[in-house]
Image (cartoon, rainbow, N blue to C red; front, side):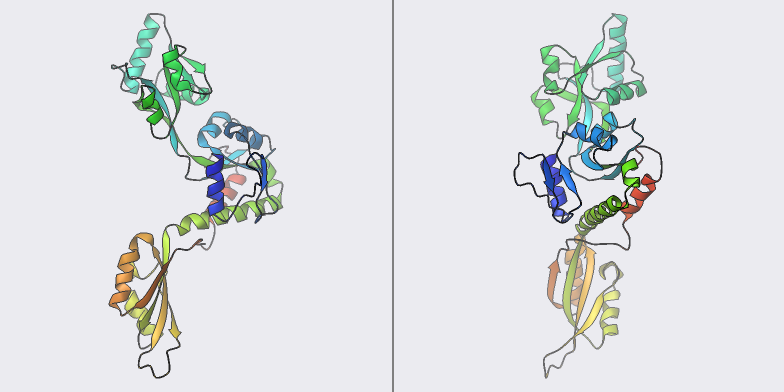
Length: 327
């Protein structure tokens, strides 16, 4: 997840400087007050919970598994990368087990003959809670850290519960997910320590800058800016003609300013700028053409800031609550 996090922050203008890939510390030149430390995803949860780090990027699966008991941890934002699911998967040879209901029946049959359903996983808390919610109480969790797809073949577990992004690794190891066996949907999240952030206004200001840049960059991906020259009688004339089609007149309407026409020109020209949804590029361009628009330029903004940051407002609500992982 480290490389993906680096790329995500870099695209938002928070480029991480790490001279040597083997280093575990780094800086963000645009945020001199921030230090970056690289840790295992699971350890990031404990570092933030203990206040050794103020914020961290890790998987939601790790937060729910290892951080749910900490009153200080809060999930500040979902970051939208590293998406996967924690799934129950059984061997292909289990032709009679296709759903969670089938698994419950198998557990009962095992109980009647004095056997236990063995599940290899490193997510003991999440799997146990999920199984209990499904009414399955007769099973044994076998802790495993890596290559657990081999557990059924090696004989130390009957099935597994693990993260899967595409299902390819499961298929290659002759395993398949079961219907209703998705435990959680996970992705990269930004977490923070409520206690340390409450105590430091400078840290809050640094976090505000980070969140605003991330939010504005993410919002910018939805929009393009169109600029065109249109002839007309006045600013009001050009504005009115563009606004005649409200769906193609920009998010807040067109900006229109006079253009200094060449000496002797019989036409008056005006420059208009529109911020529009990305999927409306061609329709808006055609609308401007129909009005006599020319020299149409389309650019993609790096940031689109709103009147306030919804992400930071939501964070402040979390900061002053005591509801643990609410997000």
